Length: 510
Ligand SMILES: Cc1cc2nc3c(=O)[nH]c(=O)nc-3n(C[C@H](O)[C@H](O)[C@H](O)COP(=O)(O)OP(=O)(O)OC[C@H]3O[C@@H](n4cnc5c(N)ncnc54)[C@H](O)[C@@H]3O)c2cc1C
Image (tube, rainbow, N blue to C red; front, side, top):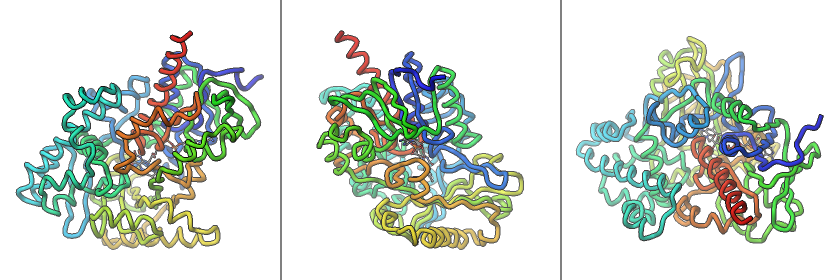
């Protein structure tokens, strides 16, 4: 029996959240889609694994853009519209901030959050709420503009707050609110989710982060992020998408500046009009395009000109007592010895000890996360890729264990309990694990850094110029909406939309 058809409308490289979102959207429009995934299961980083009979979340702390039932935000709504019904659980809190002079748990909801900051730093309620409302206005504009691009004049008239703040950094805008440092610190913990210090983080990105996470709260699937991946893959197959696992795409075939198919490691040459790639542009333009002479110089300049963002180092543990018994009171703890995001960003270039950690105890959001009388606790930092590139194969094991031990010791001291005495299972994920598991360039999970020169607004404007090969689209953290599971879905949808728009244009020109 022939494994592949002679021709597909679209081949999607990578069966994770971004690729599956593309496939769902294309299948819904009746397109013939093939997904090739190098692993034996879908989801990429959105996965779980089993140790000692216990299923363990591999990555997800919390997801944005889901929203409550009946009022879903864009990712939650897209999945429902596609017939992907995930059992979402709302995360009970925004975060616990453990910072110099601060031990505060804050909850989602703009007014609730502002009230809780005010309880800690009296007299700040109005200013914090005004800032969060500004974030929400900008967030609404971003959502509208990403779907309906409009003229500069219309933007000025309809999206004044967005236009006014677009050229400013997060710190520049926060400074205009004249907030005490402690209140600023309580607003900052999520910065690590976008991986850029406030002096260089565009306010637009900060707005999206705060309005989404603080305004609507975050969510997790009941059966871990893999529930979402599996349900997306099942639904895509039910809609006619062909998904083939253990099929590594080695080459993207191009002739006269136009894509015509791919070649897998097994040697299959498969033909299609369009290819959507989860692999980073860095990887595609340096080693996947065949022949290499089809790679325009501009494409190489583009990838060289972009700065890679963060990777992840995570210590994931199953502990032998309940969270309550171990004194772990919160779902999410952000802990740092400073909240100066520029300082912390510099620190992420090294190999530890890391000064900013983010910890999750899933049991507080999902009582079924582990068997009764146990709990899961993960300690994560998100280093820059640069430092980990310097670790030699000989040193890897030592460095990995040293960094993990430092993180466990730090959190043991904080919790007042020696976590090492309570470990039933432990897994250490490093940038190398991620690079190996997903093939992501240098293990980078966050795509390209958001900077004042290169961010969502700028990327929307340069997107057309960055189409270097006809029929080739990208879907993943390296695309316009940036990093995270929610944005991965949005990036996948955008790639599918680009393909559909192009198909329509070609159809109209016939
Ligand atoms: C420890 C950790 C914690 C995180 N926490 C959060 C969180 O709390 N919230 C959040 O929103 N995000 C979080 N993230 C980030 C999030 O997981 C990713 O941004 C998102 O899952 C990326 O999805 P993706 O579809 O773009 O790519 P990936 O999940 O990287 O998938 C790419 C897929 O493409 C496949 N592939 C690549 N190259 C090829 C090829 N040549 N041929 C065939 N297949 C190929 C890979 O096998 C993989 O399945 C976390 C990540 C880590 C590592």
